Length: 389
Image (cartoon, rainbow, N blue to C red; front, side):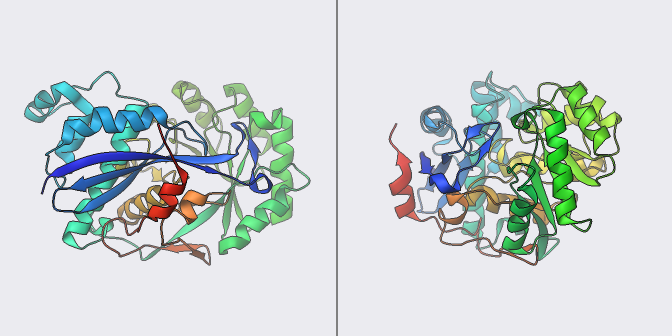
């Protein structure tokens, strides 16, 4: 079996104005992602997803070109089942032979950013190929699922204080969830406004619902500490990305100041970034995005670090159907995974890109047993929303 071609489609899906929300990224008027297609000479096709941005919207032109014209040619003719070897080829570039021979990395200059995003999409597609070629789901290749179903939390929460409880309750009702995540931070104007929104949410939802808060890295260290101090009686399940990913020591300072669990990771790349977070004791919960951090291969390495350090793993799977499916398979097999993210904003790439849909029932999501990732891409959807570059 050999790789015949690697192609990528930038999918740009407009969101109707009535379903748009406003966050610190601005008004979200579209959902964008890169669908990666790896085809073998024997006709098996694997799909993956690479993200041009952590938020819903992002310009995918550069990432599409990178995948098709730089990364893809590096692995043409390779056996797609040799996934670890291919990851090293993509990560180390022209010095891959050193990495393969000597057992340590010789990374290319683009060892962060969209290069890793591109590697992520290709890697997910390779696991899809491997599962399809053997007729087994990806989680079986990762050691088998530990659970048939896993708990999930509703993810959204942008409304002002007078409507936040109503909005969150609507999200909870979508799948019978027992936990919900809301956005806080700079978009609120100041810490006091964020605190008021969280208190309104807690009052409206009661004490039996877990509430997570996500600042998208927009607070300063001082602001994050103040937020934690003022909400210490609200039983926050976790505080996500209090400060920018560029300030890992600041994140550690926030964690040391509070008993609210700190989570982070959606803006980080590879096991090396997560190693640094762990060594600084900066987080309780690590949240790699499989379409950004390095794909399934690298995420399993990151999860192993979680398990070794007795931290928890909660993948960031705010993306399309392929990202979500990859997150399901990894989480099902992972030692330290305990919950799944379920996007409650307008997300056509999650619900329309594939023929299969992922339904939550009583706050639980079933782990699929279909071969590969278990998703069937709707090619008409791809043709409709693919951007020509």
